[in-house]
Image (tube, rainbow, N blue to C red; front, side, top):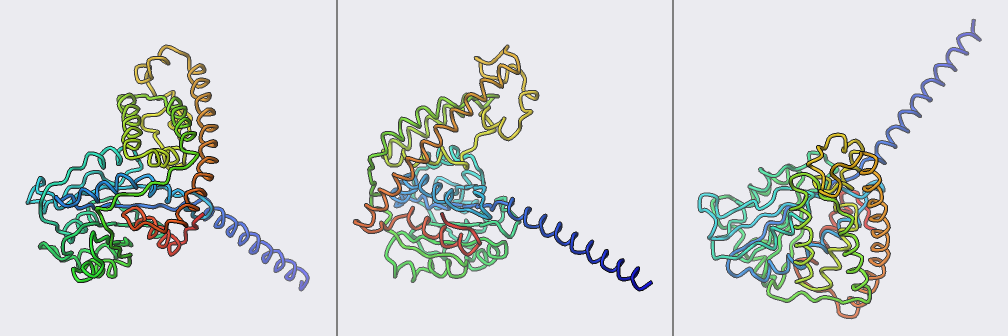
Length: 379
């Protein structure tokens, strides 16, 4: 009898540890497969004096994106969403406190670029508390505690203007796990005196002061021309479909031109971003669509396909798309290799010149610091 009881006890213990092992393996697997999420809201002052700030934002958008792509959560690249607000522009309605949500949180990076380049400055009243409150309450913030949620507000007027108390607005943001980072366009002491530093302190974020009128310095590298050629080849792998396909493909080219208009270095930064995993266009590109939904072709009507694919069999279309996918993958690998060499060259030159104090560097440095706090690894 004692032997029977002992055998049953050993059996039950074995089951317990086996279940614990399975549970632990499942837990570890689930954790490993869960990528982090990064959401960034850019709140830019577009009053008369802020042309320099907007120009810096245009010049540094793709540098900021590429910084986020170097982060990893449990070994995986994060999902990235960006939102754009403007405030302090007298062309906006007084009833809205001179605030406009230009683009909600989105992973459509070309859309962000398009609207950023369309911003125009105009004199107005800058209400920081009001725009923080609007962004906190109206954007679709991720409820996951692992998500990194960041607001960057940049401007040059006192932080406490307007009827909305900035301390209350920031307290509400903090409750949602949002970090408030402030960028004062002007003298450090003035930014402290006018409560910009206090806003960052209360928002668990970082305070910066920059010269918004300073021109962004670009480092031209020996790899920029090769990256440009790669981008031209990369663009030929996009297959627009649906009602938005043609327009979005044209927009892609327009955002290339906008980046190139800033500088060849900025154009290279955009190309590097386009070669990364965060640049996804499944809503209009067949290669990305089939990558996320292998059965997508059975859901599309013939008239939704690009002209060159209409009337062809499913097998023919799949072969065409797969060929483009392989071509894109190869080009992306080439760009990634060039990007490593380019970044090494830039870092070497920056060590000689010293860090530049501008909007992009302020955002980049704080993203990396806050990412470490949230458990992300910086590559």
